[in-house]
Amino acid sequence: DIQMTQSPSSLSASVGDRVTITCQASQDISNYLNWYQQKPGKAPKLLIYDASNLETGVPSRFSGSGSGTDFTFTISSLQPEDIATYYCQQYDNLPITFGGGTKVEIK
Amino acid sequence: EVQLVESGGGLVQPGGSLRLSCAASGFTFSSYAMSWVRQAPGKGLEWVSAISGSGGSTYYADSVKGRFTISRDNSKNTLYLQMNSLRAEDTAVYYCAKSHDDLQLVDAFDIWGQGTMVTVSS
Image 1 (tube, each protein chain N blue to C red):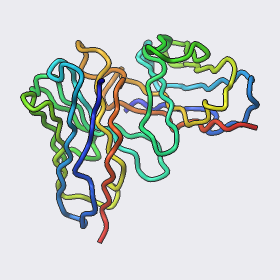
Image 2: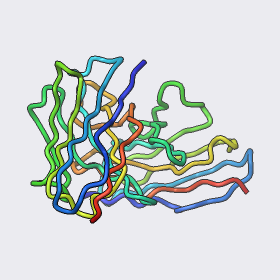
Image 3: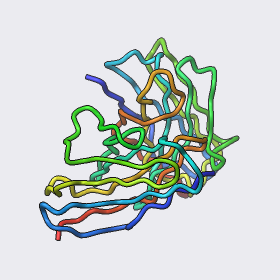
Image 4: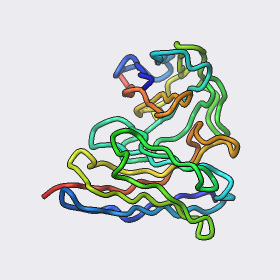
């Protein structure tokens, strides 16, 4: 199985800060990497697909980059409504696997 | 509106069975692969199973293989997960999720249901 290592596991930042989360795959997954946002008690929401494509309706402050084994998710200017846990997910090989999550809080 | 609504969760004893349903609306259900993803209390996301749009291909995580069966009824726009020989470690919120691309078995999950809680306990 492909292991997805996400870091950090949690972070605290101020409104307006640039926030960066990384996800490392245990093997080359090309660009088969997606990012989700999950708020407490809610289902995950797709933000970025295929490493860098912004899902329709998602604010442009969210972005993704990377290929191969190393990927980055960025919030360019953190907003109060961005408080959530973020997950990466690979679909290069079954089983689909998710990163452990990054909990983002406001400082 | 594109929507997925799960049902069928509840409390079941170890070794018991449960069938989850996921009713889809707002899109051509038969054109898209579907998956089940679960989340144990306070934990991360775990993919459970996927099924092709036609229902002809199915895939499972090793943790549920041989115990869970995914199926779909395209005439009813409904996805199912039959869960047998349930264990305490199967306790989780179960989400159904739609594949982003109608040409792919698995890719991004662009639509999720609200989730249904399954608790396995005596």
